[in-house]
Length: 533
Image (cartoon, rainbow, N blue to C red; front, side, top):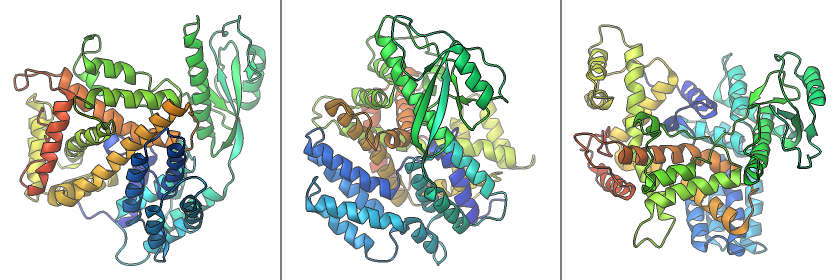
């Protein structure tokens, strides 16, 4: 039967969720760590000084960071929190006292940040394990380590009887390792446009083959017509280097598509010197819009539909360079969620966050339906009811309703994994404490989307696409953007006897806001807050 998850096991399970690339959106990490958030304040203050971002955006960010810092044990029990609050109340402008003050504070806080978390979990009451896992994961990802590397690192640690304090000590060792340079080879299946001069990174087929034989001899033979050999400076690990090389080749491909050539003829794989096997050309912020396939509308395009137009905009998110990705993602959201009378474009972030938040209980319940069925004995009545609900042909709607009603009645679940048990704990907080659980989650979602908006403005109005915050912003916002677009696409593309007419995205956002306004009454079931099945 389900027991209260042990602190160590819950932290470990959530770290695995945050690091594993295929984790569903509802179990992903949507936030950044405190140290990088302080750097973000400095970066945005520079953008304000250059008049590419409004001062209101900086004020909202300072308030969000101040609020997040209140529950961050990485600040320790000393005067850091009070000093940070005071600092963030000052004007922050490049060259000014407040700017320099924040730089000094951030540097001081970063020195003992993980040590303070290690100290906090050794006293009672311990911090909430979800918060501990988020802080550790965000801190490591923010420094440039890749998800693939960190999931392997965590796997090695958890083979023994490793405590969270041990994990933090190992994380500190990781951070002491200096970033280094890596060679990354990206083969092509056909030679690029022969009329264009090739860069120094180009290697013809023979030289590329020689490189592969020397550094990837364990890989199967590769049919290629040449390759680009990039030297990636200051990468934390081979997978991070591969992601950076993927961005570089995406930028080259974007330029090729602007010319007479159709596209860069890529093999779809790369090799990193020191890693014998191939790695996929992928980036950590890829999104997938399931609604298109599930509503069977892949080939049904309405040229007058704003939703179809937004999906067209978002289609470049997975393939374009970071600057294009952030611009496309925000354009898709804004095009759907800003309407007549809206002077503040940033409202789209709040509205998208509300839609995503209303879909979160359903996502958690759906996962637990299948987990309970898999983990329960054949005689379990709830599992039998859930199987019957699924067989009835109503999708998951009746099954998630049955599960939520069972949870409210105190029925215990059989959940086979610690990740499922952690999800159960989060869900029960939403059920039993909606007045505190929902606003806390909403703040994370809004922060991720507002960060995306700021990075879009910096890229669009200054032309800078290599800012410190761009990649982290895409990483944190990608699952939120994907789910928001999924929900808006479902509402528009899916019709049924209960819903004969499409639901406009702004109508959906208004519905989400109204449901959240009333959720503190504790009387509403959470499985269908958006009200369309």
